[in-house]
Length: 433
Image (tube, rainbow, N blue to C red; front, side, top):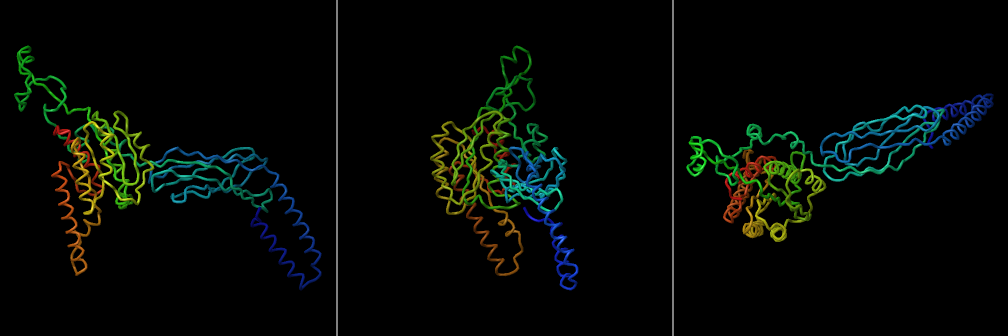
């Protein structure tokens, strides 16, 4: 129990009377009368407030919310007392969340319930822990305030904001793919799986002509094929210290996850199986699966965080080989330096014995900015040439990977989603997988 503002004002009045008595002793009786009356009222108000049942509070929150998006948290307060109560609520939300609407002021009628809403916006994926709720109530005469901390534990799962998947539900149409910058590469009639028979069209090769059907229908009939649908796509996701780099208000790992999920959606729509394997301090294995696999992948990766460990590419490749025995398209998403080259080349050599390997090597935006900046003095000249030397060495390392049969891509994190889908469609169209 703590005194309210009214009690402080009453104490100030009594103090003023006490000062007045020093100058006018005849006011002593009035002072004593007010002090006695105030003491009785304060004690009565305190006892009444202590006898009142405490309000009950419940929290309503979705089990999973997207990162970087405002989400509502609803609080319901049940007033079990026989009078209207003025309450102030403060929820113990995760400390690193942005919040709007707290503390909450509520007027709850006697023996009724009221609801209030505030908003939270998490800035990273993972589990968010809610603890208790502070409830500040006012006594019947408004002379006391009672602060209670109600235990109300809760947990929310913060998933990647994968709104792109729902926005691109109709990705299969060529028009929408081109709007995203994705080039759907088709091979007319030269896929791996037979699709249908159709009339011969100008440009069809002679190998496509079905001569039995042609003789039956007395006109040229061509076989039409489609890209093989029963293939496997496997991501190797680096969770090491290099993926901790942040730009555009998100980390490289977050952007890699979004790209992985988007490509998984596209591949699943194409009839392929998708899985992932993480390394670099976090080891998780999600075997390739077909169907509506994106939701399961989100649940399996929402709490992934980049560690401070160095990525060991060779160890990751050795761990993956016995797990993935069927030939697959391996998509390795990482961020390399010169000192990683030997280890990565050896890992790619091992993986390429059985699989087709694509390497998405992320680079920092600051490198491009440094190259685009004007050279005006010695420091800027040294910076420019240092970055240029780093990028040339990086290109040489990628050439070594290309000689091992891999397909390296040097790109910014924001370019990753569309680049990966284009590469996937290119591989599908080439028949290399």
